[in-house]
Amino acid sequence: MLNYLGDKKDERMKMRNRYRKSTALRCDAGSRCLISVVIGSLMGCILLLNLYSAIRPADEIGQHIHLRTSHHLHFPELEEVEEENIQIPPPRKRSPRATKRRPKKTTTLIDEFLDEDSQIRHKFFPDQKTSIDPMITGNDSMFYYPGRVWLDTEGNPIQAHGGGVLFDERSETYYWYGEYKDGPTYHAHKKGAARVDIIGVGCYSSKDLWTWKNEGIVLTAEETDETHDLHKSNVLERPKVIYNSRTRKYVMWMHIDDVNYTKASVGVAISDYPTGPFDYLYSKRPHGCDSRDMTIFKDDDGTAYLIYSSEDNSELHVGSLSEDYLDVTNVARRILIGQHREAPALFKHQGTYYMVTSGCTGWAPNEALTHAAESIMGPWETMGNPCMGGNKMFRLATFFSQSTFVLPVPSYPNLFIFMADRWNPADLRDSRYLWLPLMVGGLVDEPLDYNFGFPLWSRVSIYWHRKWRLPQGWNSLK
Ligand code: GAL
Image 1 (cartoon, protein in one colour):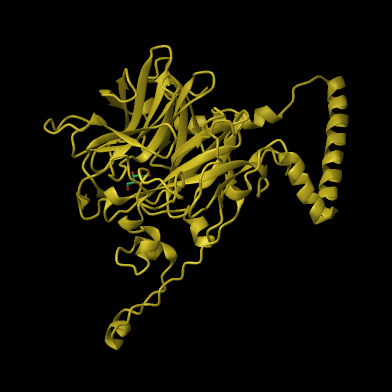
Image 2: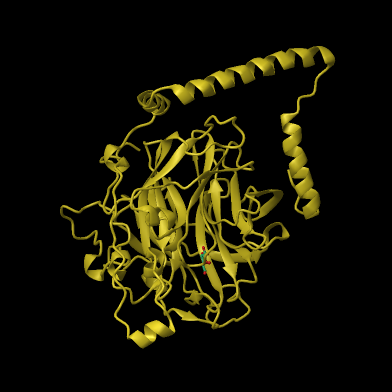
């Protein structure tokens, strides 16, 4: 494993060599011959199979896909591809003089999304009147409406941005933690990103993943001490909580930064209860590296990992946490080097690790990608865009949102909830949540590096829906 104290260039060389070595076989002269025969026959088989797949009829390919995925449950309603047909409005009338001075550029849906005054703003940020209110039960009970305002049990919009969900086995309750951003949006500098002062980490509890009770701010900002990491003038983003069964503590990790995003650190807080209050412990640069967007992931064996964007967001690092989850160890790897990804959301399916990430364009939406790996420490391979439905622009903009977490749905091994933020940089507190079904199954679209053109991993698909709900009874099957 890579110890971070090593020199970067050296590491790059080592990584290259490692990959080379892993494909080279060591053997004596006799076995070399046998190996040539084996490799020869293998290549023959691969050639024949490739030839076969090139000439077989299309319906057989369909059957093939079906066979491969038959051990997966299907959710026809959720897998339906729902189209969106949002028309870009005609340009506003301008005087001939204004047109001559600055000819009107054609706009894209992303420009419209980012334009506060767009005529189609309500398509992206539906009016308060359309809020989801779980206290008014009716025909719409349990339905998610991605992008609409989502109210808690007291009728207030949920404030849990850049968040994640913990299922607490002890209380059989879900806890949703996220950035509490219910304050004014402003720019600290002309060129700085839109921001809201730190208020703290919001926590909401639920038994059904739809009705959320506000449990209050479980980690609060520091009002007076300007040297404190949590001073309101700083940045606290993407908080995530996991439970440590050895220490019986709830451990929160988060991105801690200064107003200019130069501190680039992670912060750690701890509590005896999922609803806090959390005690803030410290911040650091993990492995001595800058760390911005991040997440944590607890594996089946209880080992937890920190995954963070580093080297100015040009790559991700993955490293294991100490047994008490309060620090990183020196076991870490650089992954997706040079790919410029952030907002990592990691999950595991049948022993394979998957991760959805975004590109790096601040609050503006961009194209999501899925990555997969046999070992969490890598190598990780990029598989492509998981988004299905909507329209092309929707898919290229992750439905106008950015990944934050992937939550497994109990009892359905290939069904997950993709949690994302639809940021509203003009008024960050009014940023919306997109929860959408994510499914693992079927063949990947693009040939991958390590597999001679054969799919090693299943496709990850996130389906766009204007309205959807989890399969009925999902909760009782737990
Ligand atoms: C995004 C990042 C958010 C926030 C934002 C600030 O790229 O994912 O968490 O940091 O930039 O502009």
